[in-house]
Length: 436
Ligand code: PMP
Image (cartoon, rainbow, N blue to C red; front, top):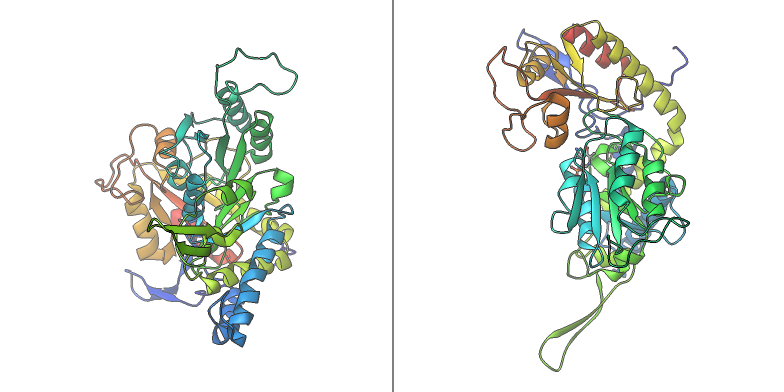
């Protein structure tokens, strides 16, 4: 379709890499799901701001004031990007992993957490010290909603249903954690329906948007999620910042995630020799220490760039690339594309597959060495999901790493190709040709 917009300019397009067959080729980054290249515009914005960088919040100097304004404005930009409600807080973290650990730290006493076993380890593991209910892998989006509803059924019934005997079930605070788009299959999860199910049973929901936000507009208001987490480095802003945005109450009531300067409003020595601290009530409560101002500024720049480009045209282009990848892979009978929800399930530009007769690590290494294509192989930090998708016990070597297997041995890990707003057609065409 000639009317599709051009890819957005990103860094690294003219980086060349050597091939084992001799010569060099322009590197084709098809590993956006791990980390996306920086948008040129993000890089330009960061470069323009860097000379004006100053310490934030308490500096009296001009550049400190300027940096404070930019840092605080970055929160507003992110809140607008996520279509947050008034009163929601935007906390700058290091990453999605950090954001979800922060929320796990802020759970109210007696909170029960519900999480599908198919989640990325960043969504699966932070709750392990809480009262966690792991939910079975669903095989359709509707199945996911049913499984969650069944699990929540022991909570206070929704209005209108029969009252339960006193003392039965769990009526304390509860949280559901769910991904918006899988980092393995790229499949979209029924977030709005899961949020409705959670809320009908008095539970809250946090959306892991690490893979959703770079590919799709995320509206906190419309999806009706309580929190959303994402990483700057997957959103074309690889400068070390992530985001946790959403309801303020649990965050304000929790002990600070990190104790230190910036999070405290007043500190005094007590008569008994101890220290008395009054913590901030705003986002700063969980941002102790000198914040990553440039990282936050870069995230805000990426939010602006994606909004300006328009998600409708980004999605159209990405879906066109996805269709080409799918059509290309469908021509190779040995290829099996991995899917939890079925072949027709909508997905973002992330797709994993195995090739019969090939070890996935060797296959990915060959794509790199012979074609200059960077994909990922392994278990993608989602071991239970890979176990479901591949059957049997995946071979692990390092948590997210590539297992060793002899050539020709049945592959119990997979190859992932992923792309986004900066991917030119040629990268996808080269990939499809190489697999063929
Ligand atoms: N959730 C999902 C769905 C992811 O894909 C990832 C990164 N692969 C994470 C969470 C963790 O993100 P980060 O490594 O930036 O903390």
